[in-house]
Length: 493
Image (tube, rainbow, N blue to C red; front, side, top):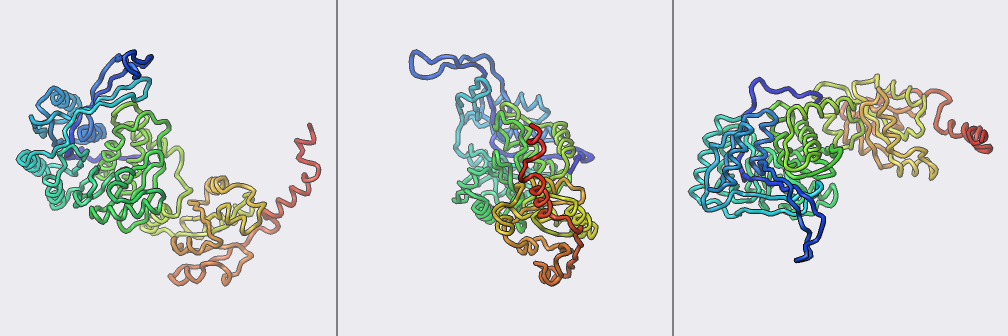
């Protein structure tokens, strides 16, 4: 994914959920109040932006979508502010119902020197009255025939109730519309019928009852929530650790954080779900759309306050990612997903493995020959602990991160993945390469994984080494030349 093209006509999206207004008071804090031991905030300015479901709508609009917003505001000045802000961004307010019994949800943040000092909330969490909920359901359902997708932004402010969501999601599914949900409920059965859910880690823990303290625990929690919701996938946002896609029947796919500098994470989840939805509507696969959403999150957290990511910003980020080159060093879970796409294109997967400590011409010649045996070359790289077990406590000379980066820099190497076992058998069984390659000091009968590969129709190839070139020989040569007297630079001092 290098450049994303817009569809011939703008995608049309229905956004349903808790509409909010975010208010920012900017100022300074220089002293403590003489009346009480609290800081004195000296207000210097104020601005208002759309929040909650309205911010999701604003993000979709900024990405080029035509947006229909269905929600509730109060009969108050803040509700009028929300309507005015929607008009400014080209979003119709005809889907907003008025509930005179509740205020428009308003979150006021006091910000001094780009730091949040305090947040004041004005809201009601009471569920909508049955008649109003039925009216909102009828209004949203009527729009299903006009849209390409539905986004539900549930902030637990009384709109996304059992009276609204289950029937709406069922009707969307019948109409063939994908549904993207930003969930807050403890019970994910509320979201049955959704295509993708985008919870954060705290929401995953709250809903599953499993503390996601490591990758295995997170995977168990995700499986629990997928079963509850019967969704196709979960995209779990993980703050500084990026995001992970859990898709039914597929291994997890992790996306590292993309932010260069984080100013404010407020509203980042709104941007994620908007970009994810837009990516799918542009024809991307779920993994590609998830990568796009993660990229959008990295942009929006670099802005202060609730913000949106524009189509142009996203395209620029994609161009920068392209200039930086493809990511070659992958986890084994990521690699399984990537290789699946290569196989769907009919490409032949070649696998080899080794320590590749102190990379030399023998290695490069060997890898080039291996690459010539297929379309994609995957290198399984021993991690530092396994190298020490195989080669001795003095090895490796270069840590695993450096060895992986050196291999990835070679044009003949497509992907590198680390393994910690003494042999690559588990990795070979997982990746199922078409061709398994080893160096000339092996015979086919001694190659680990030969039986497994040949059993499913793959082949084993032995590639000759360059005579007289090895890491051990290089180490011995360096020690012989410089070991006693020191390096030339040291002798000249």
